[in-house]
Image (cartoon, rainbow, N blue to C red; front, side):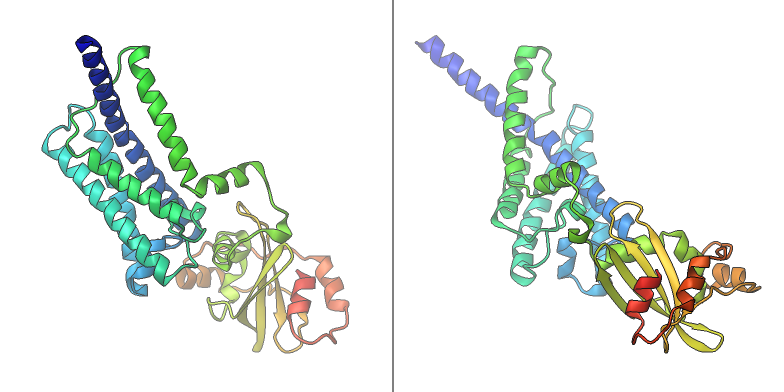
Length: 337
């Protein structure tokens, strides 16, 4: 009886040790995955603070710094957990990194609670664009569990990898169970599955104006025609079915004009079209040809590479031949594009 009790106690101790050890790779994966997802969204939107929920608690001028700091801390802590998991970084460095990770998740939990009360309409930004849904109790529970997991690793010794399949089985079982738990608490899993296995019709796709503007700025149409802009801030944005139209003020031959871009609602490499219309009449204006200072304007003023003028398009001649008795430029620009 005493021997059986000793074996049960030893088995329970081994399970607890295995449960504690798997928290370090799990926390490292969460931190590195979250930081890289934030970086990908920041690159896609050309904004450091884009999509980072906690940055909404800061003033506007401090949000880029807060976003960059959050990315640096998450990436540093995730890399530090991996570097100090073995005997190489054991001791004070490992304890410092694990305490910092615990404090990070505690502060993140408090920030999410505050953000939920102030801005219930935005997401937590934990995993970039996949965390756009509003903060719920599941997200808060996940953050609390991660803080508890980080706290459990503070006094843990160096991780020793199992050398046999029998010794690795408890690790794998508990790791899978914990992944299932965190998957249940993560609405991002559903978003990933939807994007991988299902493509919504373009008429029902949800894309913000910021995403469309970022895609426009990466397009060849922007590089060709941005020298014609009178102001780099759009003065009108609207959506029609699968396209988002972005109108910028422009001038041509001393007349007020509008440079209208049409961006297809697609996440990767959307099609972009453009047209120049008269602001007063809505008539389509032919693209200017033979502007000798065009290349200098692109390089010195806009910092963009020079591009040749588009070839003559007979379709635009047909559009210019149509009567222009329709008021406004929205309908004209949409049909011309």
